Length: 615
Ligand SMILES: Nc1ncnc2c1ncn2[C@@H]1O[C@H](COP(=O)(O)OP(=O)(O)OP(=O)(O)O)[C@@H](O)[C@H]1O
Image (cartoon, rainbow, N blue to C red; front, side, top):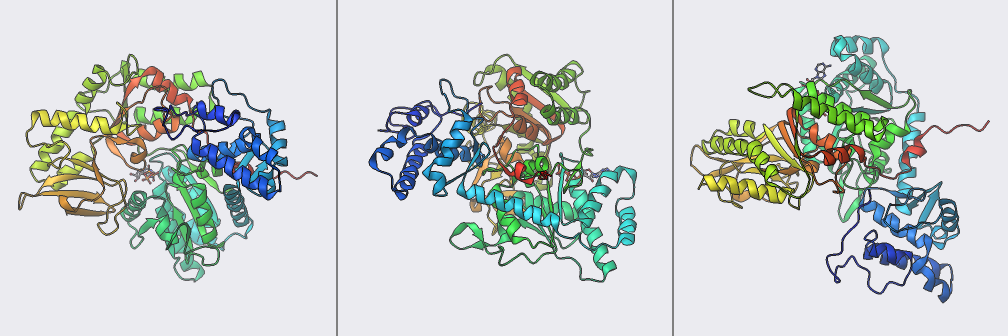
């Protein structure tokens, strides 16, 4: 489905004023291209035509030029996370017609925009220059790493250490993954939530220490990193929990080193490589193409690079779906991708639901949706045993339709969320920090959108309103004991990172309100007046919840026509829960989520595929 904008009036800045008639103007009127897409594309088209010495008649025709159209579509595609445009699969818009892809490709090849290096075409894909270069670089760097000689390995020590670190049969997958990472330069370690990726990484670090000892070289210098501060903090914590000391984790931005005045270039690059023997990047599904390019140019060729993540989860906010491309492109069983398949965290129906969503990719639409609905139906016909949810249970609260917020949705939310909010308030008021943090981690209410009747902002207000109605101590919009908090900006000085969660607690010593966060293996305890960019978190978006866990999760499905409603969104939401997932929404929304798969156009997977020799 194609995301269109609806103009909110004649003065909406997204509507191009004074554009000449033609396909570009029609697509702006249809809500596909914004005024900015159209104007920037026309202006760049004009500059390219002038540089090629074209006369005024050519310049006048650019309003309806099929190559300027491709440039405008490229600009639009970036907003939706694609790094290129596929001429064979243009967006579906009512009433729009498109040039035939072969003729279109020929027009692009003949254009000034290609001659001037603004656009690049390969097959049916057209890239803007920057993304074309980054894709080429990423593919070339990865291929060069594959062609290097394997690192030296002491086989006898490796075999002995594998038996020691991964002793039992249940560790067989991790043993194979660890052997892979020790014996190769590049490993892409994938697996769903709870499949033991972090456990495998901890084991790999131990094996590499053993190798250094056996080979008589210095202990490896290791960098642990992740795309976001919160994911980095979790990785550091998990590695410490696995009994390994001295391995702090950091964000990729910090690892690469900020360069004053630039957001796109870093201190470490091809000329100043990172001084590490092992670089581990967790939550790699959040890696954008640009960040991957910067990482690969900064990592020495002989460094062991281990990219860890779950390609079925939501991709990066910025353009690219690198991890999914690596998995699809390196399809060769001898390639760098290893997959952990067995979940050690989820049992029961959450595991079944996650598996049905993952497997939907290989099924036709009807089968895929039926498989997911079957899990929900089984749960409905055989409800979880009282008193608490059975391990890994799923509930579907099916709303009759999906228009906005109806009374049934609110009743369900009250029943699901209010008891938790009350409990959190009671323990926070009593000053029990430990218990308040525990209660906070028990439940999350997840929404697709921030705005709108089913969005985070509106549900936060409602829940706070319900609490305030029964409790004079709750000040809606202000701070009160039991106010759940979500951090929106990294603040290294306070030790808080975007996505961290906490709760306001009444101090048992002086009665003041304190904001407490359990993050990065350490407790943060601050006067509420010191808090910077935080919001109330009775509800949060699924995007923000990526990389976190709660015992029980309630997911409010968006309306069926929401552009955010995708399989990746639902998969990310349901796998946040360890014990109980409640989905509230219409069956149509649930089906819609299963059927819609985020498709980010990219040429990376093709570039990584082994080239067939012609002979
Ligand atoms: N082979 C195994 N057998 C039994 N339990 C395991 C095994 N591997 C890991 N576990 C346990 O399963 C849980 C999940 O493991 P781990 O955190 O390593 O998974 P993960 O894939 O990194 O999870 P996520 O990325 O979702 O946080 C942990 O409690 C871990 O101790």
